[in-house]
Length: 79
Image (cartoon, rainbow, N blue to C red; front, side):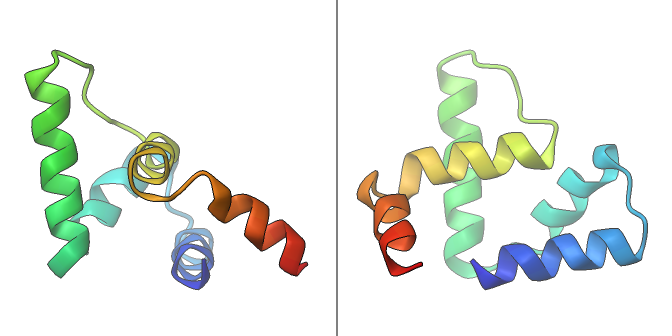
């Protein structure tokens, strides 16, 4: 995921601490990403799950919910 590497590079360049990565990442969402994020937040609230506070939790939750299980395997095969 090229966008993920670019975001991580920007965070590293600007020396963004882990606590600030999450809010900064969600502020940049547009279009489909904003829809996915909003639906994830609503589902977590509906099921009384804890709010996501860190960027790693955000990446994990979005991947688990929206990326097919075979995707990682296909990427590894391409390598």
